[in-house]
Length: 398
Image (cartoon, rainbow, N blue to C red; front, top):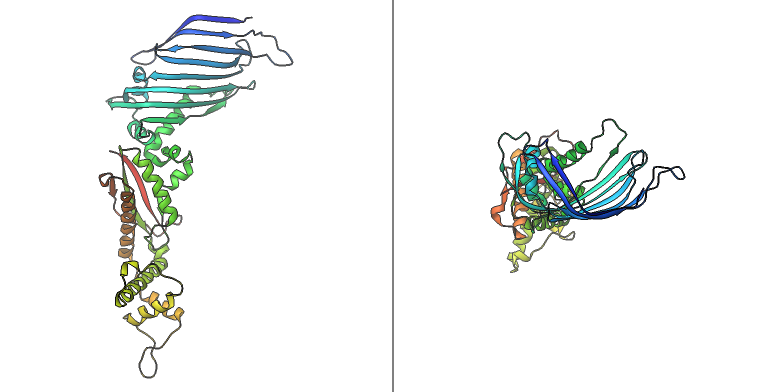
């Protein structure tokens, strides 16, 4: 049969199962389907070339190309489709039913690719670009309610563009197979992440690496420390850039700490802080600017430790004359560390400082302070084995 040419064709589609009913018209259809037959050649039914162009809803351009044979059994096809600038408000009936919100404005451009192998295996990619998608108020009594507004705020860039990819696969020979169910599962999983894993929705802004985005939702610290590492600062730079492009998002920072895992680290950090104070004091005594004292060096460590030990109000080993003994550096360090008390209050203070450090760093990257919030610091339970020293980030819609 064929070839077949379609000239100025029209398709009228109506969905009577949705309330209110949805209708979509395809018009100005022009295209061809090359010759095809039901007879198999070399064990398979040959595929015909398909080329179809037209308009959807009178304004959006439509293009479908690829290979298909309408007579092939089982079904086999390999087609690609494009839609450009489809207005979304007419789809409000679907968004109310499945998400609980109507669509006020927005356009859709889509590139899809569908392949069905002779064994019934379906592979489909759906690349969607949404422009200026805006939902209205929540519809009371709707069968479902999804956090679509937060999802849009997370996914849309500074130009209001959302670019996502929804792959779908399955076997048409499976009695339980339902394309609609798979598509709906993919959409709800994507939107549901707005609440459960918001940073995964920002993955495309980090080069599509969802794992990296999830890692950026927690800022790692060394045990007992509230100092940002270079890697943590680099991650926060990315966060600040992405949030800067999404002005409808706020971020909350919650510092955490754990007494059992950070006791030793906290003591060492506290001792370093005492030595830095000593270094600055010596700079002032010699007429230097204490602000330029800089970090500790390996060469300075024994000298500054000795000065801290000499000033420390702790029990010290003494000689026969009652004077404090000269001790090796390691022994002085051991005595000083043993004298530093660490409790839950110290951990809460450490957790709070971590939150403050992260919040201040984001503010230094030109994020407005009214979008930055400091959450209540948390001292994590001792039995949290997989926990790591960190500050946690969460995002909400303004």
